[in-house]
Length: 486
Image (tube, rainbow, N blue to C red; front, side, top):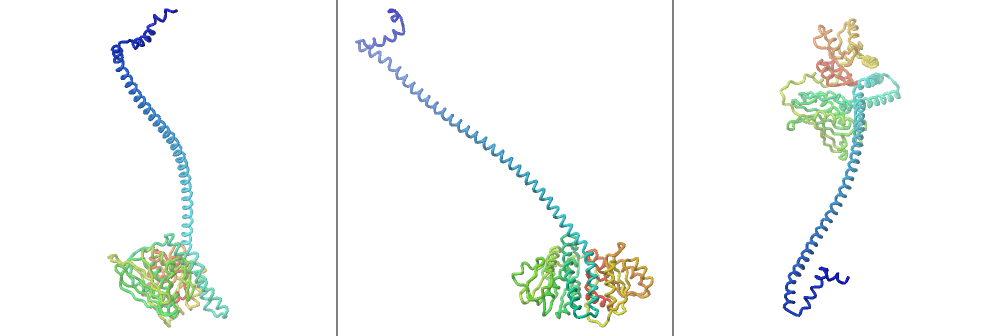
């Protein structure tokens, strides 16, 4: 046991260094210390280098850990954002699907509303003839009744009923016009037309009205051809002149035209009440009437029709007015420079002047398919002293003319008759029937509640006069007397 430490090499190596330091020889001690110094320096340098490397590795590991932490956080944020985007996408798709369904439902509702509105509009446009027929019979019968000897009280009632019928007629006619424009049943047909014909026709239409109201009606025209639909333009100007006469109590109305650049401007001047400035913007609105000291007759639809027809034809409508002094309305129509032929049209009726020639013993043929209107028309003409032959169709006319020995003086025919025959065809047959006994065609009047372009074209081609239903008895009488004089 005691000898084991002496044989251990590790123990000897551990004991030997102290022996060296106990040596008395300083040189040997010095040599020993000099030999161990470089080893210590190298060891310290290596330790320092290893510490730096360790610190660098630690910093790199820490940065890597931070980057991994940031990447993980970003990864988690990306996952969360993706989930939010997915949820919002699902919500958006659901909203778009609901919106698409809503749009489909709205589109169907809109189509149904437009179809319903179009059906109503087309019904009004198509039913105008049937609705105006009984009104026409009532107006004719009322005119006959006004000519009878009745008590003063009955006379007042008759006048009130007649005014009410006139108001209903104006309302229905205007509503039908609006319906036809909205339903595009009435579409303007632009052609070359003389401005003088339009103005002469207006003078013939309103001369008697102005005279009865104690007003002067003057016209001025130029030999200019314009591009327009004469039916639309005539109706526009008729409404303007009618308004001018209605709201003028003293003075008169001037209908004229003047050239402005490439346009011919039709003008209607009046010395009426004028339009207040604050009413200028609403003047063309439906059912709008300017409050003034004048009459409140009318429905406020005349200028609405003027505006719609102006837009349909492309004719600009404008006006100036001074309240208390009068107004001027202008319709700008393009001047025609085309070399196309003018539309053939019957000349406008001459100005109706007072005459001593009456209707007694005049022989008038009346063709009307509505029995009530036919009876009312016959009763009125007989009341005026005329001899009448009535028929409801071309077949009946042919049968009754076999018993007639006298040449008719005038023919009054409805446009729409039985057996799909129109008035101008019946007029042509009667004229041919008496062509050998008369040097000129028999004067004829076509009456209709639907003055469409086709109707007016056939009336003009047949060289007939035209009157709209319900017929105004005073206008009918004036026209018949004019035709008799002609």
